[in-house]
Length: 192
Ligand code: GRF
Image (cartoon, rainbow, N blue to C red; front, side, top):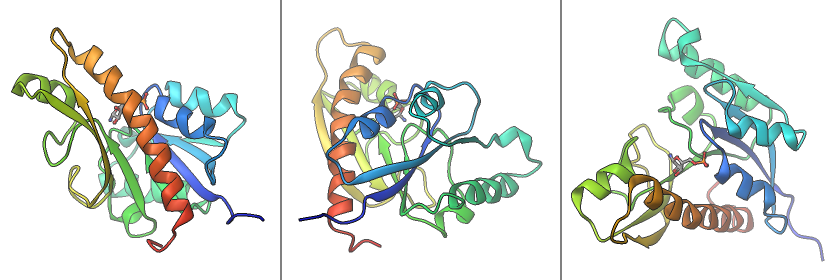
């Protein structure tokens, strides 16, 4: 018996790309990364993509006079690869309407939304003194980490945790969650 065609993914990254790597390594997941994009040069995520021989692209905000032009350029670069879905995996930019009106986007975030949205979620959770935090996978809308939640995983804060130690444990849960979510979205495409 053959399964459905793999879900075509464009993955957007800004950092080390370990979430991207988890998706690339998920051999049993019915997904295929068709391109990787970044908002800056020289990221680990781009190197991981290149090591797999995947097409990559960079679309830098400072290269455009206005934000809307960046959004439109990014949309063109993404849509060139005809994705079924875009994955924002540590992509540290707010996506605009040119992308969001053209394709569905999921984001992974290192906190239990709606708590601690934004770029410093792990630091903010630690500063607040929560004993449990975690990660969230959600649909991207026009807000900052506000879209409908797809899945979450809880992670305990341990005594002595720093932002780095806590973030590393969250990322272990986050990578597993992301692969599980993408597998589920590939198996049930009623969201399309
Ligand atoms: C992840 O925790 C993501 O949620 C956050 O930045 C981290 C990216 O990690 N926004 P990586 O680049 O996938 O290793």
